[in-house]
Amino acid sequence: MMKLTGYSLPASSTPVYLNILKKHSIFSSNIFQRNPTKSRGPSTYTQRDQVLADDVMVAGQYLPPWFSVAPMMDWTDNHYRTLARLISKHAWLYTEMLAAETIVYQKDNLDRFLAYSPEQHPIVLQIGGNNLENLAKATELANPYHYDEINFNCGCPSPKVAGHGCFGARLMLDPKFVGEAMSVIAANTDVPVSVKCRIGVDDHDSYNELCDFIYKVSSLSPTRHFIIHSRKAMLNGISPAENRSIPPLKYEYFYGLLRDFPDLRFTINGGINCVDEVNAARRAGAHGVMVGRAAYHNPWQVLGHVDSVIYGAPSSGITRRQILEKYQVYGDSVLGKYGIKPHVRDVVKPLLHLFYSEPGNGLWKRKADAAFQNCKSIKSFFEETLVAIPDSVMDSPVAEPLSGRDDLFENIDSLLPTPYKLREQEVLYA
Image 1 (cartoon, rainbow, N blue to C red):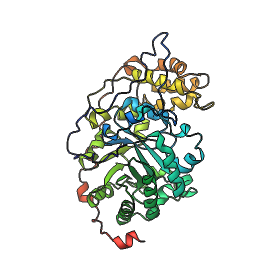
Image 2: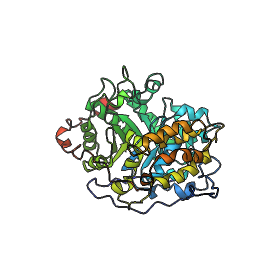
Image 3: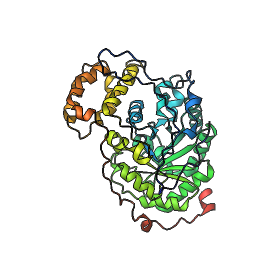
């Protein structure tokens, strides 16, 4: 497998579409027609089925991660990622965070946690943990699934993770351990590794402390890519949801890192909600942009413009009816795959935002609540609920992009913190 390197281009250049993705069109179409031919669902990577692995896992065939969807617990599961990939062919997708212990202790049941369809490439596995041995084992166990990158979680503020679990954002207070962890992860995989973190934790929130963390981790490990959530984490007194809104965004810290660590790559995360703002961040110099809740709560409008507006690809003209036809094949193929799960409700969950702010959206959700009580297939669920959505909505391609804050980063250069003063001996051997 080839490591993906050297793919950042000047943010000011117009994205040029490169037709380098192989097509793996194994979804059937026309499944809303009367008496459709039964279709086999999409294949998945399992430990025994790796025939397509070498074919689809050449890193150079994917476009750079100018746009990625953030890892979100309970949200960016297989079902959401399937929907996201049907809408955008080029967005980089992340799994939910998986604890290394889960992977190690479920080694006889790994497909349930790690398998995914080949269409989801490019895809990044995010793992969390604080035990070097388990991180090494988890990474090794994940190798047969051919993820395109392994990301280490140093940003989650949840008490279950940062408190009782003593990992996630709390690890920013121990950069020496993070450097060791990244070395262990990198030693057990052939794909690139990266860190996702905040700009600080509690009162450890100065720019110099952030730089100390970046410097130490990158010096002690092969890590060359950092995803920076531009808020600090507050581990005491506020909830994970409040941690996404109460700590102020400090984009100047992110752009300071670009200046002070020119040999590293940085992806910005936090408060960016549409492709206009993604392009604004890239024009200001960001190597990549990660979008979280906006891509989940309004996937059609956000993801529907990624390929054309971010990557410069021709517009596909795909409609939501076509998306749902393909998703139905996927959904019915995975129902009950692991005993009684997933249920119809589990598979449909990411679809509930597909008609955000559209006519019929409220009625569709009410019908969905009722249909969950009796529908046993995705096909029957659609038959009961989609009558609420007008044909004009179902059959229209994505509308014009939402207007963003084009000036979001306009004066960022004047706000940058004082340049980092390296204290090499003190930082490395603290």
